[in-house]
Length: 443
Image 1 (tube, one colour):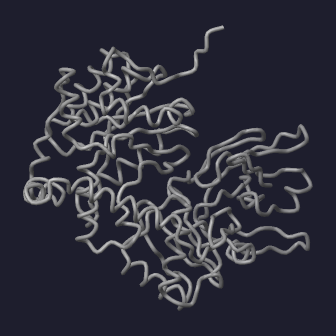
Image 2: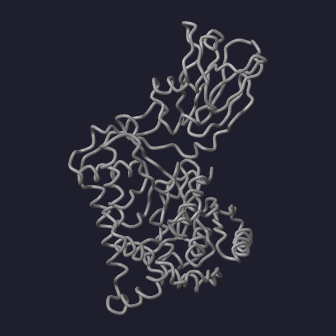
Image 3: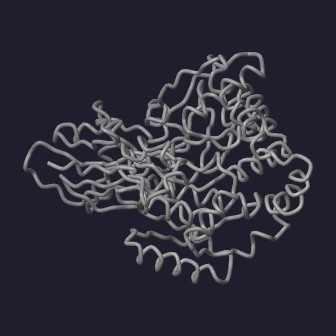
């Protein structure tokens, strides 16, 4: 029987010596071992080269992901052009119109955050997303971060590969200068989209590219290679440098975190430990000044927060936890019944289960309104606020947890607080909320 698993092939005679194909070939094992292969396809020269090379030499399916930032009047036209080109090559194409929220961080940073968040949502478990960053991009990134006072993590610039949500990100062309991509595009008669904003020197990266890099190239022609090598060496040092480690523990709702007592007392060592812990969570540490201020605050009391790109860590009691994403999108009220499942932000699949055949009407899953009380076996009732305190429910969860209520003519009765606690009546009927996430069942 013929082996139908995807492979990287040599393609047309002689083309195997092309540096673009050679760069892809070095990652053949990653491509063939992925559950699904994606490419970030903007329609520009770089991603057009990568898309063409993948389509020519990788036998497995490739899905093109196009992020439309909506920042240019021709953005919809470009998106349509990308879709047409993918259709001509029988490449599945997925696009989205992103909401770019500046929020004082600048358009470049906001667009990047929105783009990567969407990529994370699209890449399935075990999938790999290819991006067309090259050596020129790496040199620009290193200089930008140096000018912004980045620490060791930031100065390592872009890694060839890293985790991305449940999958991974791969930059196979990172060691190639852009000139190699230009030669490939010309020799294959490729067409691509030229975004006029790429020459707008109001943006920092464009200013470097248009005004600074040409000066460097005249004096130091090999600057791309040397800067990329410096970033690579620093990354290796970061990865192998022994330092204090923070063991990950989990809160009452499964939030990953670490104990404050595990943080070294010396500020520099504490910052190093926190950077390492963030990296284990696939998070990029913020600038050093913000990191040090957060470390100062968490030693003073609860409530200190460090906010990154779509993530937040916060002290609660004697630990620091990573907030789950999108808690605010929890439904306010949802009519339900025994046997029904519902996807709940931060908890995964939430199932309402009971062993008997008794039918219960008026069951509702909703979030906290205020004043809810849970019945106790003693016949007394306990305020929901007290339940949260006793069960160590962090503040960011308290208005987002699912409450199982039963409505009747006499009002509402609280039967269960998520999977944490249920009333005596719910227990007698065998009713419980079951949380199922990433292979873990919690009752």
